[in-house]
Length: 229
Image (cartoon, rainbow, N blue to C red; front, side, top):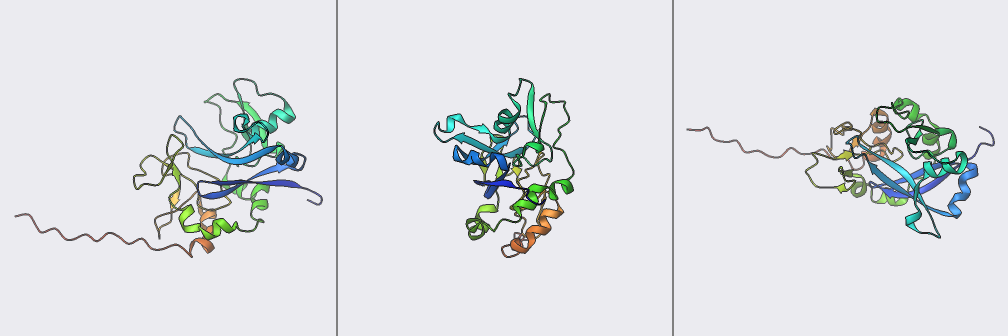
């Protein structure tokens, strides 16, 4: 790894958490021309949601925006023909190093490349790099308010009401950008009944911070109903 360099771009906040994108060293210069941000993309067919890096030309405005993985593929490999799409090999949709991108048929029956075991994601270069970053001061300061109950409906809108019968949750662990592909896919914290995790790894890693705000959820008091006469 000696002399190996990658770029980490802060995408800003989405779903209550600060997001980052990973780029190859030779693509870092793009920050001089493009503004980067995080974007939630909800599958219209009900297959969950994902968070991507989005960029637009600073001089041309938001109308010139592209998903970063598509922008980089076209820059280095040429255009994307109809019927094809760019996928992330390790399943991390904000890891936009060229070696992590692949062009695959967009046929719905095509098995997604990104369906990889979580342990591969957790030991990836992206996770190693992101976990070296200092804690975002805004995220630490507003942790209880910003990270609870942030999920999306089929229209990509943030839903914060009690009625969560048709929404997708994002993993609560800050470095993780995974969102549910199916309703109720993620496990919920058994103590506070508020936050959800994509797996035990994220829940265990998040506990040192989450325990500062985790409060046992009290069951509603129910009065005993008198017997019918």
